[in-house]
Image (cartoon, rainbow, N blue to C red; front, side, top):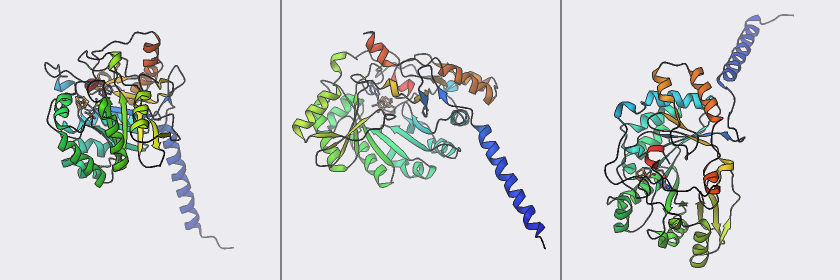
Length: 359
Ligand code: SAM
Ligand code: SF4
């Protein structure tokens, strides 16, 4: 019997290559990022800057802001390296946020670098939309999958009072542009009593008319201006009642516990509304997210003030393994979350401001 030895050798070589790839893949995976409460982190929010072109009243002071020193902000190379380390620990969904991510020059370069990392399932951005329209095609081309655009009002004068700048038309144009570019799109609306709770119904109608998912967010004590008070929080229940009475009855959708928003459709199936009830129904039990601040600290929880300094490790020349070990140890100390603060009746305005930690 004649053998085609050349062919067999080729087959053996291919098999060896496959085994090697499999071995390398296993080597790149270092176990899950679990915490002391049995939760596992899969989502990473990266704050790329603390700078912002708005001054939303619920997020940061309007003046005398103490910015991070430029040298203290992680470079794109540092962010990409850290992201790869997190991905090797089971993180697979990345969200770029800030501050305002679009004010950092060449942000699309970072999106591109992260989207090329093996193991990243999706990369999205949270933005105020002011500069998005001009960048949307470049971002999409770089690999961006989705955007959450913040919009708290449809009234020009009110936009200026809440956000400090006259920008409503630019945000509306960015919403259209993101939709046209084919990005997954959600609208984030922080609802505050006395400021915009009278527009909850308008947002519900907007969701029905445009087909965009609107997520109504309860005001959290992370404002940095000290204005937060319990009575300013408009609860999910109140918002559901307003919409049921004035628009149409809401029907809960099949919800995924790994998403902070509880999603509803309307009784006639037209439109989707989400609620992020961080205060009235905290979802800490299902928390699967962690954050990196723009100055390179790991925050395992929004309500953790200092966090763990990863920037120092990077700049001291530590290896990926050293950084992984430090991250795994830090995760074990992840606090239970806002739920324990609520339980202890210890809620108060905080100076741990959102633009610094990345909402
Ligand atoms: N600049 C971007 C933007 O505004 O979308 C990204 C950063 S911002 C800190 C991220 C999200 O956090 C926004 O949707 C914003 O509305 C939300 N946010 C900020 N402060 C908040 C607070 N005190 N309570 C609830 N949500 C807040
Ligand atoms: Fe800037 Fe976003 Fe904070 Fe508004 S919510 S001040 S846009 S970081």
